[in-house]
Length: 78
Image 1 (cartoon, rainbow, N blue to C red):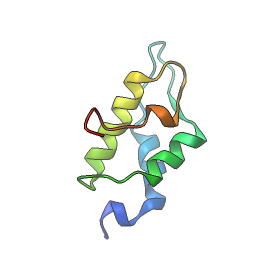
Image 2 (cartoon, rainbow, N blue to C red):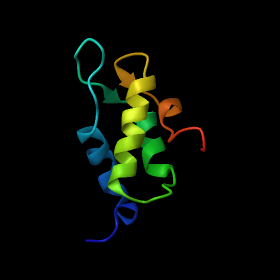
Image 3 (cartoon, one colour):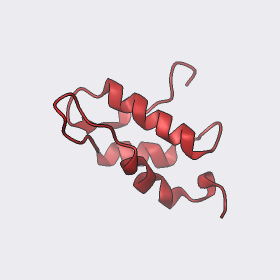
């Protein structure tokens, strides 16, 4: 298989599989803008574990049932 960064169409389905649950136990979801942000961002390590980390961090900073584009980042270095 080609590397994940060459398969941009796989990013959103993979990201959805990594979505955490919110504090009330419901499944978080990605907004359309967050999906676009995930597909358009450049990934330093270009691997699935980096995508998982981005989603987990976004889930921690989400302030509702939905992850928005401004919550999609990989930490302070970005």
